[in-house]
Structures are given as structure tokens and as C-alpha cells.
Length: 203
Ligand code: ADP
Ligand code: MG
Ligand code: ZN
Image (cartoon, rainbow, N blue to C red):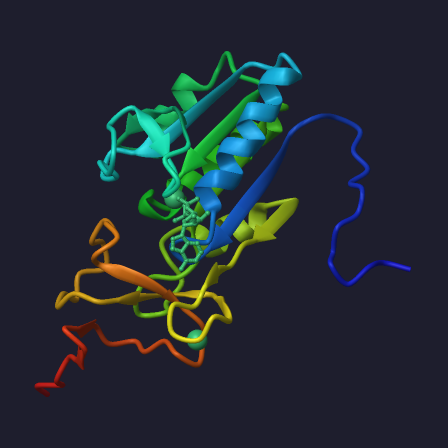
């Protein structure tokens, strides 16, 4: 009987697959990516981790979680660089996958086709609640999907959304703690909230 949690053993004839860790801000995506990469080191597998060069939070050459856990990462501007720099690795980690272009999907497909384990972490939704960049296509490509949840700062429920709390409507506003908070569906709103007020609709 298949379990509803969806976790089961994947029967494969050759190595190579895609894993996606998805959720809102503060849900522990980066922590989970770091945990999986650390485990590959015990298995003596070669790994390489990338992050988007837009993410300059904390450190340019580390992937750092909100708990200040960190691993080495290479900042890159595009997916093709990930492909060319992954040739010697058995395991490829990618943080902030939502910032890359659609070509990341093909790059992951090629890497997995060459027998590599590809582990991606990214925001599934932007602050407006819309699917973020290549994430829906990466979720479709993946053999394994792990959805992680933060805690809603309003009510304590599981949070699935990132509430923007500064007055900006740009899709990419790389998130320091002061720009977003984690909220559940009921407490979240698709307009920025700042200084306790919802943004006024000028239309
Ligand atoms: P992500 O990469 O998904 O943004 P991180 O892995 O960097 O998340 O950080 C997760 C950590 O953030 C948690 O372990 C916790 O210590 C901290 N944190 C801060 N705010 C929240 C929140 N509202 N809900 C859950 N964790 C939070
Ligand atoms: Mg993160
Ligand atoms: Zn809530």
C-alpha cells in the first residue's frame, strides 16, 4: 500500500536523479541542503555547491542558513556555468534555484542523465504567491520533492508563504530578515505590509 507521505524507494537501473527542497522563507531549505551535502562527505562522494550570485547575504562564497550554518559554495550568474563546473562532481547542490533562468531545468536534466545526484533548494513562490522562476519545472523534473515549512509569525501554524514587509513590488528583493516574514495561507496577503499598514492600492 503506498503511503500518503509519498516517500518510497525509487527503483533505478543507473545512478542520476534530481531532488528539490521547496518552501517559503525561513522554512529550512538551506539547512536541509547543507545537511544533505554534509552527508555525502561521509560517503566520500565528491560534491560541489552553487548559489546565485544575486544572493550576497552573509558571504559571497558560502551557503549560509539563517542559523549561520554554512558550507562552501560557488556564486554563479547562470545555469550553464553550473554545468561546466560540475563535471568532476558526483553530487551537485544548488541553493536559491528560483533565481536562475529556465535553462537550469535542462542543465539539471543533463547532469542527472550523466549519473549525478542533483539537489536543489529554492522558493516555490514569490512574495505575490506566484510560482517562482524555474521552480515549477524543477519540481516536475524531480524524482524526489521535499516541501519544508516555516512557522507563521502571526499565529504559529505551519507557514507556506513569504510576506513582504517593505514597500517594494520588485519580484527579486534579496531577503534580509527585515524584508520578509513567514506566514500561513490565512495570515498572508499578496500586498506588501510595512510599518503595520497594508500598501494602499493607487489604481
Ligand atoms: P531558508 O533557506 O528556507 O530561508 P534557512 O535554512 O536559512 O531557511 O533557515 C531556517 C532557520 O530559520 C530555522 O531553523 C530557524 O532557526 C530560523 N527561523 C527564523 N524565523 C523562522 C520562522 N518564522 N519559522 C521557522 N524558522 C525560522
Ligand atoms: Mg535559504
Ligand atoms: Zn498564520
